[in-house]
Length: 527
Picture 1 (cartoon, rainbow, N blue to C red):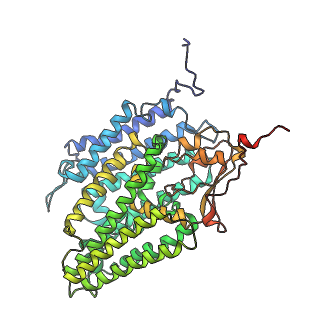
Picture 2: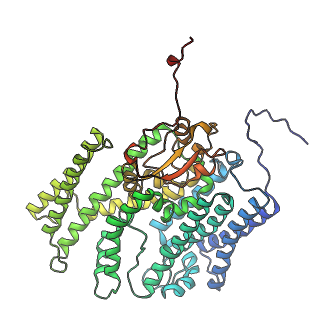
Picture 3: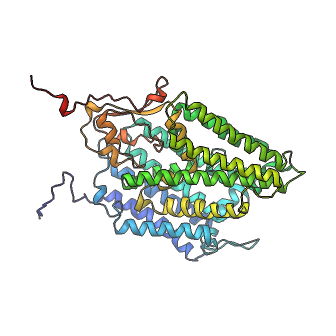
Protein backbone atom coordinates (compact mmCIF):
# COMPACT_ATOMS: atom_id res chain seq x y z
CA UNK A 1 0.00 0.00 0.00
CA UNK A 2 1.43 3.37 -1.03
CA UNK A 3 2.04 6.00 1.63
CA UNK A 4 2.00 9.73 1.00
CA UNK A 5 5.38 11.35 1.49
CA UNK A 6 5.28 15.07 2.23
CA UNK A 7 9.03 15.51 2.39
CA UNK A 8 10.61 18.14 0.12
CA UNK A 9 13.93 16.24 0.17
CA UNK A 10 15.32 15.10 -3.16
CA UNK A 11 16.72 12.06 -1.35
CA UNK A 12 14.47 9.12 -0.55
CA UNK A 13 13.48 9.33 3.14
CA UNK A 14 12.39 5.69 3.07
CA UNK A 15 15.59 3.66 2.76
CA UNK A 16 15.41 0.39 0.88
CA UNK A 17 15.19 -2.77 2.93
CA UNK A 18 18.08 -5.17 3.35
CA UNK A 19 18.23 -7.99 0.83
CA UNK A 20 18.55 -11.65 1.84
CA UNK A 21 22.32 -11.73 1.36
CA UNK A 22 22.80 -8.68 3.59
CA UNK A 23 20.61 -10.19 6.29
CA UNK A 24 22.53 -13.46 6.25
CA UNK A 25 25.84 -11.59 6.37
CA UNK A 26 24.71 -9.53 9.35
CA UNK A 27 23.55 -12.70 11.13
CA UNK A 28 26.90 -14.42 10.52
CA UNK A 29 28.90 -11.40 11.69
CA UNK A 30 26.72 -10.87 14.76
CA UNK A 31 27.10 -14.53 15.70
CA UNK A 32 30.88 -14.08 15.68
CA UNK A 33 30.52 -10.98 17.87
CA UNK A 34 28.15 -12.93 20.15
CA UNK A 35 30.88 -15.52 20.77
CA UNK A 36 33.20 -12.66 21.75
CA UNK A 37 30.59 -11.26 24.14
CA UNK A 38 29.83 -14.53 25.90
CA UNK A 39 33.53 -15.12 26.59
CA UNK A 40 33.76 -11.52 27.79
CA UNK A 41 30.98 -12.42 30.19
CA UNK A 42 33.20 -15.09 31.76
CA UNK A 43 32.28 -18.25 29.84
CA UNK A 44 35.33 -20.44 29.13
CA UNK A 45 34.93 -22.41 25.90
CA UNK A 46 36.24 -26.01 25.74
CA UNK A 47 38.31 -25.64 22.52
CA UNK A 48 39.36 -21.99 22.31
CA UNK A 49 41.47 -22.62 19.22
CA UNK A 50 38.48 -23.86 17.24
CA UNK A 51 36.08 -21.26 18.60
CA UNK A 52 38.56 -18.44 17.94
CA UNK A 53 38.97 -19.56 14.33
CA UNK A 54 35.19 -19.73 13.93
CA UNK A 55 34.77 -16.30 15.53
CA UNK A 56 37.33 -14.58 13.30
CA UNK A 57 35.96 -16.32 10.21
CA UNK A 58 32.40 -15.26 11.00
CA UNK A 59 33.30 -11.61 11.62
CA UNK A 60 35.36 -11.46 8.43
CA UNK A 61 32.73 -13.31 6.38
CA UNK A 62 29.97 -11.11 7.76
CA UNK A 63 31.62 -7.81 6.87
CA UNK A 64 32.84 -8.98 3.45
CA UNK A 65 29.52 -10.65 2.64
CA UNK A 66 27.57 -7.54 3.60
CA UNK A 67 29.70 -5.45 1.27
CA UNK A 68 29.37 -7.95 -1.56
CA UNK A 69 25.59 -8.23 -1.37
CA UNK A 70 25.27 -4.45 -0.94
CA UNK A 71 27.06 -3.55 -4.14
CA UNK A 72 27.09 -6.64 -6.43
CA UNK A 73 24.03 -5.68 -8.46
CA UNK A 74 24.82 -1.97 -8.59
CA UNK A 75 26.94 -0.18 -11.14
CA UNK A 76 30.26 1.22 -9.88
CA UNK A 77 29.97 4.74 -8.53
CA UNK A 78 29.02 6.76 -5.47
CA UNK A 79 27.32 4.59 -2.84
CA UNK A 80 26.20 6.70 0.11
CA UNK A 81 22.46 6.35 -0.26
CA UNK A 82 20.23 6.81 2.79
CA UNK A 83 23.07 7.42 5.27
CA UNK A 84 21.10 10.19 6.97
CA UNK A 85 18.04 7.95 7.34
CA UNK A 86 19.79 4.92 8.87
CA UNK A 87 19.65 4.72 12.68
CA UNK A 88 23.12 3.20 12.75
CA UNK A 89 24.71 6.03 10.78
CA UNK A 90 22.71 9.12 11.78
CA UNK A 91 23.31 9.11 15.54
CA UNK A 92 20.12 7.15 16.01
CA UNK A 93 19.40 4.45 18.59
CA UNK A 94 21.62 1.80 17.02
CA UNK A 95 24.42 4.31 16.58
CA UNK A 96 24.31 5.17 20.29
CA UNK A 97 24.22 1.48 21.25
CA UNK A 98 27.26 0.75 19.10
CA UNK A 99 29.08 3.77 20.48
CA UNK A 100 28.40 2.74 24.07
CA UNK A 101 29.65 -0.81 23.44
CA UNK A 102 32.83 0.49 21.77
CA UNK A 103 33.44 2.96 24.59
CA UNK A 104 32.91 0.26 27.22
CA UNK A 105 35.41 -2.02 25.45
CA UNK A 106 38.08 0.67 25.56
CA UNK A 107 37.38 1.50 29.20
CA UNK A 108 37.84 -2.14 30.20
CA UNK A 109 40.88 -2.45 27.94
CA UNK A 110 42.74 0.48 29.45
CA UNK A 111 41.61 0.54 33.05
CA UNK A 112 40.09 -2.82 33.97
CA UNK A 113 41.66 -5.60 31.83
CA UNK A 114 41.03 -8.13 34.61
CA UNK A 115 37.36 -8.02 33.64
CA UNK A 116 38.33 -9.17 30.16
CA UNK A 117 40.00 -12.23 31.66
CA UNK A 118 43.57 -10.92 31.86
CA UNK A 119 45.50 -12.85 34.55
CA UNK A 120 48.53 -11.45 36.32
CA UNK A 121 51.85 -13.27 36.55
CA UNK A 122 51.88 -16.94 35.61
CA UNK A 123 48.18 -17.48 36.31
CA UNK A 124 46.04 -18.71 33.41
CA UNK A 125 43.88 -16.28 31.49
CA UNK A 126 40.13 -16.66 31.53
CA UNK A 127 37.19 -15.38 29.53
CA UNK A 128 37.83 -13.23 26.48
CA UNK A 129 41.62 -13.09 26.79
CA UNK A 130 41.83 -16.89 27.17
CA UNK A 131 40.00 -17.25 23.85
CA UNK A 132 43.01 -15.66 22.12
CA UNK A 133 45.67 -17.72 23.92
CA UNK A 134 46.02 -20.31 21.11
CA UNK A 135 46.79 -17.64 18.50
CA UNK A 136 49.19 -15.86 20.86
CA UNK A 137 51.11 -19.08 21.58
CA UNK A 138 51.24 -19.80 17.84
CA UNK A 139 52.74 -16.41 16.97
CA UNK A 140 55.04 -15.66 19.91
CA UNK A 141 54.95 -18.57 22.32
CA UNK A 142 53.33 -16.59 25.15
CA UNK A 143 49.87 -16.33 26.61
CA UNK A 144 47.68 -13.54 25.29
CA UNK A 145 47.45 -10.10 26.88
CA UNK A 146 44.65 -7.58 26.58
CA UNK A 147 46.74 -5.79 23.93
CA UNK A 148 47.07 -8.94 21.86
CA UNK A 149 43.28 -9.31 21.93
CA UNK A 150 42.91 -5.69 20.91
CA UNK A 151 45.48 -5.97 18.12
CA UNK A 152 43.80 -9.06 16.70
CA UNK A 153 40.31 -7.56 16.70
CA UNK A 154 41.70 -4.30 15.31
CA UNK A 155 43.36 -6.13 12.43
CA UNK A 156 40.25 -8.21 11.70
CA UNK A 157 38.19 -5.00 11.54
CA UNK A 158 40.63 -3.31 9.14
CA UNK A 159 40.84 -6.36 6.86
CA UNK A 160 37.14 -7.23 6.82
CA UNK A 161 35.84 -3.69 6.49
CA UNK A 162 38.68 -2.91 4.09
CA UNK A 163 37.31 -5.40 1.59
CA UNK A 164 33.86 -3.85 2.00
CA UNK A 165 35.36 -0.41 1.38
CA UNK A 166 37.07 -1.62 -1.81
CA UNK A 167 33.78 -3.03 -3.08
CA UNK A 168 32.06 0.28 -2.34
CA UNK A 169 34.67 2.43 -4.10
CA UNK A 170 35.63 -0.06 -6.81
CA UNK A 171 35.16 2.68 -9.43
CA UNK A 172 38.12 4.61 -8.00
CA UNK A 173 41.65 3.17 -8.41
CA UNK A 174 43.15 5.52 -5.81
CA UNK A 175 40.75 4.27 -3.11
CA UNK A 176 41.47 0.63 -3.95
CA UNK A 177 45.25 1.01 -3.83
CA UNK A 178 45.42 3.04 -0.62
CA UNK A 179 42.99 0.68 1.14
CA UNK A 180 45.14 -2.30 0.17
CA UNK A 181 48.10 -0.33 1.56
CA UNK A 182 46.59 0.26 5.02
CA UNK A 183 45.48 -3.39 5.13
CA UNK A 184 49.02 -4.54 4.32
CA UNK A 185 50.69 -2.28 6.89
CA UNK A 186 48.19 -3.16 9.61
CA UNK A 187 48.51 -6.91 9.10
CA UNK A 188 52.23 -7.06 8.37
CA UNK A 189 53.88 -4.19 10.24
CA UNK A 190 51.49 -3.44 13.08
CA UNK A 191 50.36 -6.97 13.98
CA UNK A 192 52.48 -9.87 12.69
CA UNK A 193 56.00 -8.39 12.67
CA UNK A 194 55.98 -7.17 16.32
CA UNK A 195 54.68 -10.55 17.46
CA UNK A 196 57.39 -12.38 15.51
CA UNK A 197 60.01 -10.09 17.07
CA UNK A 198 58.79 -11.08 20.53
CA UNK A 199 58.99 -14.75 19.53
CA UNK A 200 62.66 -14.07 18.67
CA UNK A 201 63.17 -12.50 22.14
CA UNK A 202 63.53 -9.07 20.55
CA UNK A 203 61.75 -5.89 21.72
CA UNK A 204 58.19 -5.30 20.61
CA UNK A 205 58.42 -2.69 17.86
CA UNK A 206 56.18 -1.34 15.11
CA UNK A 207 58.53 -0.09 12.37
CA UNK A 208 55.88 2.06 10.70
CA UNK A 209 55.04 3.91 13.92
CA UNK A 210 57.07 6.94 14.91
CA UNK A 211 57.27 9.81 17.35
CA UNK A 212 55.21 11.75 18.33
CA UNK A 213 52.40 9.27 17.64
CA UNK A 214 54.66 6.62 19.15
CA UNK A 215 54.90 8.47 22.45
CA UNK A 216 56.45 5.42 24.10
CA UNK A 217 59.59 5.58 21.93
CA UNK A 218 61.48 7.68 24.52
CA UNK A 219 60.20 5.94 27.63
CA UNK A 220 62.62 4.08 29.91
CA UNK A 221 61.42 0.56 29.14
CA UNK A 222 61.49 1.22 25.39
CA UNK A 223 65.01 2.67 25.32
CA UNK A 224 66.27 -0.02 27.70
CA UNK A 225 64.92 -2.78 25.47
CA UNK A 226 66.46 -1.28 22.33
CA UNK A 227 69.84 -0.61 23.98
CA UNK A 228 70.03 -3.98 25.75
CA UNK A 229 73.04 -6.16 24.95
CA UNK A 230 70.75 -9.14 24.44
CA UNK A 231 68.93 -7.44 21.55
CA UNK A 232 70.38 -7.99 18.09
CA UNK A 233 67.93 -5.62 16.41
CA UNK A 234 67.66 -2.93 19.09
CA UNK A 235 70.03 -0.50 17.40
CA UNK A 236 68.22 -1.04 14.09
CA UNK A 237 64.94 -0.10 15.77
CA UNK A 238 66.48 2.97 17.41
CA UNK A 239 68.09 4.10 14.17
CA UNK A 240 64.95 3.54 12.12
CA UNK A 241 62.95 5.54 14.65
CA UNK A 242 65.20 8.59 14.26
CA UNK A 243 65.37 8.19 10.47
CA UNK A 244 61.58 8.11 10.28
CA UNK A 245 61.33 11.28 12.37
CA UNK A 246 64.02 13.43 10.79
CA UNK A 247 64.55 12.12 7.24
CA UNK A 248 62.00 9.70 5.78
CA UNK A 249 58.85 11.44 7.01
CA UNK A 250 59.86 15.00 5.96
CA UNK A 251 60.90 13.82 2.49
CA UNK A 252 57.72 11.82 1.85
CA UNK A 253 55.55 14.63 3.22
CA UNK A 254 57.25 17.13 0.91
CA UNK A 255 56.43 15.02 -2.14
CA UNK A 256 53.04 13.57 -1.19
CA UNK A 257 51.66 15.53 1.77
CA UNK A 258 50.54 13.88 4.98
CA UNK A 259 48.43 11.38 3.03
CA UNK A 260 51.44 9.06 2.65
CA UNK A 261 51.14 8.33 6.36
CA UNK A 262 47.64 9.27 7.52
CA UNK A 263 45.79 7.54 4.69
CA UNK A 264 48.26 4.91 3.45
CA UNK A 265 50.23 3.64 6.45
CA UNK A 266 48.88 4.67 9.86
CA UNK A 267 46.87 2.14 11.85
CA UNK A 268 44.60 4.82 13.34
CA UNK A 269 43.83 6.09 9.85
CA UNK A 270 43.44 2.54 8.59
CA UNK A 271 40.67 1.78 11.09
CA UNK A 272 39.03 5.16 10.47
CA UNK A 273 38.98 4.65 6.69
CA UNK A 274 37.65 1.10 6.77
CA UNK A 275 35.57 0.37 9.87
CA UNK A 276 34.82 4.07 10.34
CA UNK A 277 33.76 4.82 6.76
CA UNK A 278 29.99 4.60 7.49
CA UNK A 279 30.36 7.53 9.90
CA UNK A 280 32.53 9.94 7.88
CA UNK A 281 29.62 12.30 7.17
CA UNK A 282 29.15 12.95 10.92
CA UNK A 283 32.23 15.18 11.18
CA UNK A 284 31.44 18.70 12.39
CA UNK A 285 31.80 21.22 9.55
CA UNK A 286 31.24 24.35 11.67
CA UNK A 287 33.70 27.23 12.00
CA UNK A 288 33.72 26.68 15.76
CA UNK A 289 34.90 23.07 15.28
CA UNK A 290 37.69 24.30 13.00
CA UNK A 291 38.91 26.78 15.61
CA UNK A 292 38.63 24.18 18.36
CA UNK A 293 40.54 21.69 16.23
CA UNK A 294 43.54 24.00 15.84
CA UNK A 295 43.78 24.88 19.52
CA UNK A 296 43.48 21.29 20.77
CA UNK A 297 45.72 19.49 18.29
CA UNK A 298 48.62 21.91 18.65
CA UNK A 299 48.23 21.90 22.42
CA UNK A 300 48.62 18.13 22.34
CA UNK A 301 51.72 18.55 20.15
CA UNK A 302 53.26 20.94 22.68
CA UNK A 303 52.32 18.57 25.52
CA UNK A 304 53.97 15.54 23.90
CA UNK A 305 57.07 17.57 22.98
CA UNK A 306 57.57 18.82 26.53
CA UNK A 307 56.93 15.36 27.97
CA UNK A 308 59.35 13.71 25.53
CA UNK A 309 62.11 16.23 26.29
CA UNK A 310 61.59 15.54 29.99
CA UNK A 311 61.71 11.77 29.43
CA UNK A 312 64.95 11.94 27.45
CA UNK A 313 66.62 14.11 30.08
CA UNK A 314 65.44 11.95 32.99
CA UNK A 315 66.61 8.81 31.17
CA UNK A 316 70.11 10.25 30.78
CA UNK A 317 70.03 11.36 34.42
CA UNK A 318 68.99 7.94 35.72
CA UNK A 319 71.38 6.04 33.43
CA UNK A 320 74.55 8.04 34.04
CA UNK A 321 77.56 5.90 33.21
CA UNK A 322 75.47 3.45 31.18
CA UNK A 323 74.92 5.63 28.10
CA UNK A 324 77.26 8.01 26.30
CA UNK A 325 75.20 11.20 26.74
CA UNK A 326 75.24 12.92 30.12
CA UNK A 327 72.28 14.99 31.42
CA UNK A 328 74.28 18.14 30.66
CA UNK A 329 74.83 16.96 27.09
CA UNK A 330 71.11 16.40 26.64
CA UNK A 331 70.28 19.83 28.07
CA UNK A 332 72.74 21.52 25.70
CA UNK A 333 71.40 19.62 22.70
CA UNK A 334 67.84 20.64 23.56
CA UNK A 335 68.87 24.28 24.01
CA UNK A 336 70.69 24.22 20.68
CA UNK A 337 67.77 22.67 18.81
CA UNK A 338 65.26 25.13 20.26
CA UNK A 339 67.41 28.15 19.42
CA UNK A 340 68.05 26.77 15.93
CA UNK A 341 64.31 26.41 15.44
CA UNK A 342 63.71 30.02 16.47
CA UNK A 343 66.42 31.28 14.12
CA UNK A 344 65.08 29.23 11.21
CA UNK A 345 61.47 30.37 11.44
CA UNK A 346 62.48 34.03 11.67
CA UNK A 347 64.94 33.61 8.81
CA UNK A 348 62.30 31.95 6.62
CA UNK A 349 59.94 34.86 7.24
CA UNK A 350 62.11 37.00 4.98
CA UNK A 351 61.68 34.63 2.04
CA UNK A 352 58.10 33.46 2.44
CA UNK A 353 54.79 34.76 3.78
CA UNK A 354 53.67 31.47 5.32
CA UNK A 355 54.34 32.63 8.89
CA UNK A 356 52.08 35.27 10.37
CA UNK A 357 53.24 37.49 13.20
CA UNK A 358 50.95 35.70 15.64
CA UNK A 359 52.33 32.31 14.64
CA UNK A 360 55.90 33.51 15.04
CA UNK A 361 55.22 34.83 18.53
CA UNK A 362 53.50 31.62 19.68
CA UNK A 363 56.15 29.26 18.26
CA UNK A 364 59.01 31.43 19.53
CA UNK A 365 57.46 31.51 23.02
CA UNK A 366 57.10 27.71 23.17
CA UNK A 367 60.61 26.99 21.88
CA UNK A 368 62.03 29.70 24.12
CA UNK A 369 60.29 28.25 27.17
CA UNK A 370 61.73 24.78 26.52
CA UNK A 371 65.21 26.27 25.97
CA UNK A 372 64.97 28.35 29.16
CA UNK A 373 63.89 25.41 31.31
CA UNK A 374 66.66 23.27 29.84
CA UNK A 375 69.19 25.99 30.63
CA UNK A 376 67.99 26.18 34.25
CA UNK A 377 68.28 22.41 34.51
CA UNK A 378 71.80 22.54 33.08
CA UNK A 379 72.79 25.05 35.78
CA UNK A 380 71.02 23.43 38.74
CA UNK A 381 71.63 19.78 37.80
CA UNK A 382 68.04 18.85 38.67
CA UNK A 383 66.66 15.42 37.73
CA UNK A 384 63.65 17.07 36.03
CA UNK A 385 63.77 19.51 33.12
CA UNK A 386 60.49 21.13 34.03
CA UNK A 387 59.00 22.02 37.38
CA UNK A 388 56.68 19.01 37.40
CA UNK A 389 58.07 15.51 37.93
CA UNK A 390 58.85 13.84 34.60
CA UNK A 391 56.97 10.65 35.40
CA UNK A 392 53.92 12.64 36.48
CA UNK A 393 53.93 14.30 33.05
CA UNK A 394 54.20 10.88 31.44
CA UNK A 395 51.29 9.59 33.50
CA UNK A 396 49.07 12.54 32.57
CA UNK A 397 49.84 12.26 28.86
CA UNK A 398 49.25 8.52 28.91
CA UNK A 399 45.97 8.85 30.80
CA UNK A 400 44.37 11.85 29.12
CA UNK A 401 45.80 11.67 25.59
CA UNK A 402 46.93 8.12 24.74
CA UNK A 403 44.09 6.37 26.54
CA UNK A 404 41.08 8.67 27.05
CA UNK A 405 41.44 10.77 23.90
CA UNK A 406 43.00 8.42 21.32
CA UNK A 407 41.15 5.29 22.44
CA UNK A 408 37.94 5.92 24.35
CA UNK A 409 36.89 9.08 22.48
CA UNK A 410 38.85 8.56 19.27
CA UNK A 411 37.27 5.20 18.42
CA UNK A 412 34.38 4.84 20.86
CA UNK A 413 32.76 8.01 19.51
CA UNK A 414 32.89 6.98 15.83
CA UNK A 415 29.07 6.67 15.60
CA UNK A 416 28.57 10.06 17.29
CA UNK A 417 31.32 12.43 16.13
CA UNK A 418 32.65 10.80 12.97
CA UNK A 419 35.56 8.53 12.18
CA UNK A 420 38.49 10.95 12.49
CA UNK A 421 37.96 12.52 15.90
CA UNK A 422 41.45 11.59 17.13
CA UNK A 423 43.17 12.33 13.82
CA UNK A 424 41.50 15.71 13.52
CA UNK A 425 41.56 17.01 17.09
CA UNK A 426 44.30 15.17 18.95
CA UNK A 427 46.96 13.32 16.95
CA UNK A 428 50.35 15.06 17.35
CA UNK A 429 51.69 13.17 14.33
CA UNK A 430 48.92 14.67 12.19
CA UNK A 431 49.79 18.09 13.62
CA UNK A 432 53.46 17.88 12.62
CA UNK A 433 52.72 16.47 9.17
CA UNK A 434 49.96 19.06 8.72
CA UNK A 435 52.33 21.95 9.37
CA UNK A 436 54.70 20.71 6.69
CA UNK A 437 51.85 19.95 4.29
CA UNK A 438 50.51 23.47 4.71
CA UNK A 439 53.78 25.28 4.11
CA UNK A 440 56.41 22.98 2.58
CA UNK A 441 54.72 20.30 0.48
CA UNK A 442 53.90 19.78 -3.18
CA UNK A 443 50.51 18.24 -2.38
CA UNK A 444 47.27 20.03 -3.11
CA UNK A 445 43.72 19.22 -4.22
CA UNK A 446 43.08 21.20 -7.38
CA UNK A 447 39.61 22.38 -8.32
CA UNK A 448 37.82 23.10 -11.57
CA UNK A 449 35.28 25.58 -10.27
CA UNK A 450 33.52 25.99 -13.61
CA UNK A 451 32.28 22.38 -13.40
CA UNK A 452 31.05 22.58 -9.78
CA UNK A 453 27.26 22.23 -9.36
CA UNK A 454 27.39 22.85 -5.57
CA UNK A 455 25.87 19.47 -4.74
CA UNK A 456 27.86 19.39 -1.48
CA UNK A 457 28.91 15.74 -1.66
CA UNK A 458 32.56 16.70 -1.15
CA UNK A 459 31.91 18.66 2.05
CA UNK A 460 29.41 16.14 3.40
CA UNK A 461 31.79 13.20 3.15
CA UNK A 462 34.95 15.01 4.23
CA UNK A 463 35.89 13.18 7.41
CA UNK A 464 38.10 16.09 8.54
CA UNK A 465 35.25 18.61 8.49
CA UNK A 466 36.65 20.72 5.63
CA UNK A 467 34.15 22.73 3.59
CA UNK A 468 35.52 21.48 0.29
CA UNK A 469 32.62 22.93 -1.70
CA UNK A 470 33.56 26.48 -0.69
CA UNK A 471 37.00 26.01 -2.27
CA UNK A 472 35.55 24.38 -5.38
CA UNK A 473 33.07 27.21 -5.92
CA UNK A 474 35.95 29.72 -5.89
CA UNK A 475 38.18 27.54 -8.03
CA UNK A 476 40.79 27.62 -5.29
CA UNK A 477 43.29 24.84 -4.55
CA UNK A 478 42.69 23.07 -1.24
CA UNK A 479 45.77 23.12 0.98
CA UNK A 480 44.67 22.52 4.55
CA UNK A 481 46.92 21.19 7.29
CA UNK A 482 44.12 18.91 8.49
CA UNK A 483 43.51 17.25 5.10
CA UNK A 484 44.65 13.62 5.16
CA UNK A 485 44.42 13.19 1.40
CA UNK A 486 41.93 10.33 1.57
CA UNK A 487 40.54 11.43 -1.80
CA UNK A 488 36.93 10.63 -0.96
CA UNK A 489 35.88 14.18 -1.87
CA UNK A 490 37.12 13.52 -5.40
CA UNK A 491 35.63 10.01 -5.42
CA UNK A 492 32.11 11.24 -4.60
CA UNK A 493 32.17 14.25 -6.92
CA UNK A 494 29.78 13.60 -9.84
CA UNK A 495 31.47 16.18 -12.08
CA UNK A 496 35.18 15.46 -11.68
CA UNK A 497 35.84 18.86 -10.13
CA UNK A 498 38.53 17.73 -7.69
CA UNK A 499 41.94 16.16 -8.31
CA UNK A 500 44.71 15.14 -5.90
CA UNK A 501 47.96 16.45 -7.36
CA UNK A 502 51.61 17.16 -6.55
CA UNK A 503 53.22 20.27 -8.02
CA UNK A 504 56.64 21.81 -7.40
CA UNK A 505 56.54 25.27 -8.98
CA UNK A 506 54.17 27.18 -6.71
CA UNK A 507 54.48 25.69 -3.23
CA UNK A 508 54.13 29.03 -1.43
CA UNK A 509 51.37 30.27 -3.76
CA UNK A 510 49.10 27.21 -3.85
CA UNK A 511 46.27 28.66 -1.81
CA UNK A 512 46.16 32.10 -3.46
CA UNK A 513 45.39 31.39 -7.10
CA UNK A 514 41.73 31.51 -8.06
CA UNK A 515 40.77 29.69 -11.26
CA UNK A 516 37.20 31.00 -11.30
CA UNK A 517 36.56 34.53 -12.52
CA UNK A 518 34.50 36.45 -9.94
CA UNK A 519 32.61 39.52 -11.11
CA UNK A 520 31.08 41.77 -8.47
CA UNK A 521 27.89 43.75 -8.93
CA UNK A 522 29.80 47.03 -8.96
CA UNK A 523 31.85 45.87 -11.93
CA UNK A 524 28.77 45.40 -14.11
CA UNK A 525 27.77 48.52 -16.05
CA UNK A 526 25.11 49.06 -18.67
CA UNK A 527 26.50 50.87 -21.68
